[in-house]
Length: 507
Image (tube, rainbow, N blue to C red; front, side, top):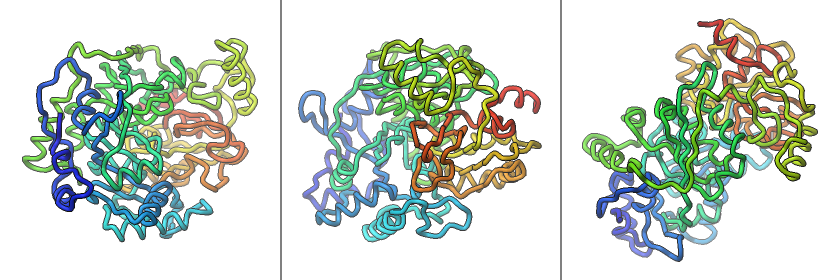
C-alpha cells in the first residue's frame, strides 16, 4: 500500500519538499494499491502509511500531522535551530499556545503559572513565526488545548496519522485518527522528515453494548473499563472502541473515551469514522472541501473494520452494568460505582496491588468500607482535554442551573478552547456557572496538571481530568476523577455526590 507522500518524499530533494508543501496533506490523498479484506481499521491505516519495513515488526511511517505546544514544542524548535535543520513540510505542522499560558481572564501573551513558562512560550512563538508554521497564539479565536482544537479545526482527520509531544494525543482517535504521544527527539525527527519509525502493536477491540443510564457518560465508560481490566491491560495494543453504545455517542463523547486510552496504557485508541464523524468534520477549517471532501469520505468509508477481522483481544462490556464512576485512589484503575464503599486493600488480587491500594488510601485519607458519597470536598474542577468541550459544560450546567456551589468550596471551570468558551457564552452557560459560584476562565490546560500554581494544594478535589497520581494537581492534592455531571453535583453538595438525583429533579 502506498500513498502519494511516498512518491514525493525525499528529505534531500527540494522538489519533494516543495511538492509536499503545495498539496493538501489530508489522508484522503492516499491511494490504495490493492483491495484489503479481513483487516481491522488500524491494519488499513497502518498499511497506507507504511513507507518501508525497517526490521521485524517496525515500519517507517508517514506522519500526516505534527502538533507542537509550548511545553514540548519549544524544545523541539530550539533543537532544530541548534542543529541547523529545517522543517520538511511546514503545511503539516501546527503550533499552538495552550499548555503553559495562564487561564485567568485578562491574561497577557507570556503570562504563565510555570516559572519557565515565559521562556517556552516566547521560544515557540518566535520559532513558529520564523519558520512560518501554522501557528495559533494565546489570543487567536481558534486557540485551545491541542487535543480539543485539533478535531474542532479539522487538523485531525480520519485515517490520518497525528503526533504531538503529549501522551493524551490519542484523544483525537475519537474522529478516527491514529494518533499518539511522542517525545521531543521523536518530534524533532518528524519535523525534519515527516516520518517516524514505529513498532506495530497488537489490536484489541473493546465493545460497549447496550444503553447508558441517566447520569452515565463516556467518562464513566472508560473509568469502568480501566477499573475492571486494570491500568496495564492496554499495554502493547491499539484499541478500537466499538459496540452499539459507542456508535450512539456523539463525537465529543468519543474524544473523551479515546482520551484516556493512555490511562489504560494503550498507545493508540480510536473509534472508526462513520456518518456521525463526517457530519462533525464537514466544513471545519482544515477539513477537505468540495470534490476533495467527497473523495475523502469515500476513502474513509473504505477503512471500516472488515467483518471477521481478527483482533488480538476482544473485550465486551454491558453498559447497563455501568453506574457513575469516581476514583478513590491514585490511579484511574482505583475507580468504583459512586454508590459503593471504599474497597479494602486486603481484598486486592496480589501483594503488589495490596501495597498500592494501601498507599493510595493513606494518601487520599480514606478508610476501607466507608461510603464515597458524602465525603466532604474542598474544590471542584471542570477542564482539561478529557471533559471541557461544549457538551461537557452543558451537562454540568443542567445541574448547576438555579443552584449554588456550597460555601467554602472552590469551583473552577476552564473551557477546552476559545470556540468552546465563546459558544458557551453565546448560550448563557457562563452565566449559569458564574451565578452558581464558579470561576470562568480562558481556554487552556489550566489546573489539570501542576505547572507551578498551588491552587489545589492540600485539598480534596473532584475533577474532570484524566490523572490522579500523587501531586498531579498540586502538592498533596487528593484528586477524584469523575464526569462533569458528578463534579457539578459534588460542587453544590459540598461533598462527593451522585448526579442522578439532581438530574432527575430538572426533568
